[in-house]
Every structure is written in C-alpha cells, then in structure tokens.
Length: 487
Image 1 (cartoon, helix red, strand yellow):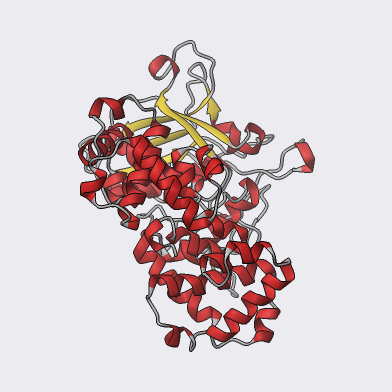
Image 2 (spheres, rainbow, N blue to C red):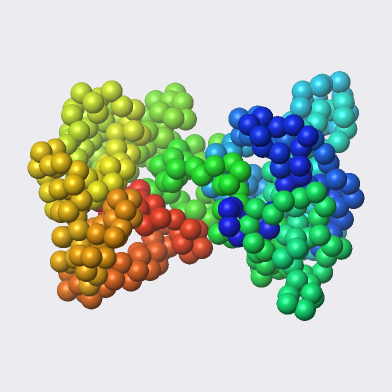
C-alpha cells in the first residue's frame, strides 16, 4: 500500500466528527484474505485513526504458541509501518485473561491465530475493520486481526511478513489498492481484478500497482515490503519519523553495528536472546563480569555496548587493551575522543548517556551546511563559529563546484537543505575513499547520489527503494551510524 501525498491509492473512511477538521478515514477490511480474493463486507463508519490515541497501537495475542510466527509478524510490522512513521506498536504479549472470552474490558488490537493447511504458502490473514475500530476487549470476542498459520511451522517467512504488513495496513486504515479508481487502463480494463471502487473512501496518492495493499503486486503477496508510495501515504497521516539509525534500535542496533550478528540473525532471535548475546560479548571483551552486565537495564546495557563498538570500530584501542577496561574506563576514553573529534565540551558529554555520547559523533550532520563543512574538514569548528551563515553557505558552494562537475550557478540554485545534502554526499565519498578526488570531479550531484545509495545498501542492508525515498542527508546519515566511517 502506499500512502502519501502524491501517489498511490489508499483510502480513508469519512468520519462524522474529527478533531481539527480531519474528516477522512479508512475503510473496512474484509473477512478472510487467505486466498487473495477481495472480501470487504461492511463499511465501518465513525472510526478514528490512531492519531486519536497519540499514534500508539496496543497489540496483544489471544492465541498461545506459534512463537516463531509471532516473532516474524512483530519484526515485519516494526520494520515497515513503525519504522517510517511516528506510530508505536506496544505490548505484543498475551491478551488480558489469556485468550478468547473472559471478563476483561481492557481494549487492545487483538490478534487471533487459527490453523490452516499448506495453501497460500502456509499463511493468511484478515482484519475485522479499520483504524481504532480494530480495538476490542475479551468481552467483545472480536479480534482486530486473525492470522492463519500451518501449525507444523512450515509457513513461508516471506508470506508471513506479507500477511502481517498487509493486515496491519488495514489496522492503520488502508483499504485494498486494487479497489481504487486508478485500477483501470485507458480502455477501462482493470489491471487487477476487483469488485469495484471502494465506497466512502478518499485516495491519498495515485494508483500504485506494487503497493503492499494491492493483491496484484509484483512480489506476488510473498514479501512484506512497502513501496515509496506506501511510505508517502503512511507519512501523510502518521508523520515521518526522523531517520532511525541502527543506534536507535538499542541492543539490536549495537549487535548489528558491532557486527556481532547480522540483521537476518537478529530478526530470527527473541529479544531476550539478543540481550544475552550482548552480555556475553561484553563480558568476553571487557574486564567486567557477566553478573555486572546482567544487572544493567536494557538502555544501559545498549549504551555500554555502544562504547565497546565505538572503540573497536575507530580502532583507537586494540581488543587486548579493551579487555583490561571496565565500562567506566570505556566511557571516560570515549568522552575524551569525542571531545577531540567533534569539539563538544567535556562537561556536556559527561551529562549524556553512553549511547548519546556515541551518537553525538554523527549529529554534526544535523547542523546542515555547518555540519557538512566540519565533517568534510573544509573548516574547523572555531572557523565556523566566526562565520555568518551566508559565508558558510558560499564556502560550501565553492567547495562543491571545485570538487564536482556541477557549476556554481547550479549549487546557488539549491536551498540550504539540498545544498547540505549534496555536500554530505561529497564528504561521504571522500571520507570512505570509495572514489578519488579525480573521479569525483567528473560526477554530478545526481551521480554522487546514485553511487552513495548503492554503497549504503551494501553497508547497511537497507533496500534500494527505501534509500531512494530518503533525502541525500538521510542516506549519508544512515551509513555513518558506523563511527569508523566518520572523518
């Protein structure tokens, strides 16, 4: 499904009243969608987007067991709808009273699991409604989403991911893409079989044949990927989350950036296993004990892991030297090194958490033109502090026009954000050494962007379509999660 201001066809059902004049909402998700047929039986009126609940979607499981499938579902939702918006999917434990029925009136977006055979690669699903109408209690005995898995554990992972992302699209308010008016060619023939246009719905973007909400997408309903239009539509309702780097994933991100586990391995691990893995890595690589690291909460454990990763990646200390250090020793060393690297004051850094100290190395990018000039070592922090903003802008224009094939006039035509983003591309290519200054001199801004996107895919594992939806600065920031790739 795609969602955004310009492309793709997601619909909202109109609500009678909505705060701040918002009167569009989403349609109804049909009964079962295991077979790929459209079954939208009722239109739910007066439903609300999750913006009415501070963008929080409380999720719980009615059905016990199926732990592997549940982990895949949660990861798929987190890596798509949650990743690209301000939505938070919370809970994910057993529903109150432990299952169907009971007396609890507490409402959640409840998921019920039913067994199925090998059809549709062993997995399917359906949603009972749209938006906050998918909330229910045990008394209601009406799950917001029903998922179907082969109980022998053979369901295809890609199919599970598709089912999760598609059904949660309904939970967020999106209807089937093929039911949009755009699903016809110039002769009125449907691109994808549909019973007709969805009633009482509003398109957020133009038709998207590859949307996660389109039964005829190019992945054959076997991958849980969002298209650029899906992301745009999503963000038009739920906002765009600031670029989320691996550090923002806490323990998971530390294990990933530290190369202790791959993304694929992490996706298959329960959270407790990830935590224990980081504890083992820290106790094996520093002088503190397993018991000490077990005593830390998740945030402090991740922060200490980030210190270890920083020291190893920038190679300021060898593994043998780090083995003699405590967590406090690592913190003190990293604070001194970060102070020298980016010019932040010692007392300012001492007031930060460990993870904030490590992340501060990449935050110079957030200063736009100023950050690019500093990260590229075109000017020192002291020089930049003495320069008015117009002089900083002109300095970056000169550096770019001297070092690439685009002209001064071209760079002067860019706004500050686009100028900073293009400068970040230049800095990335020079710092990583992937291209020489002579090679960069033959490149345009577009050439640099395309090259860095390809490199970012290799370095971060992000999909090309995801990177293409980012600004230049966001692409570069996604790579510089790794402190070793910084100047």
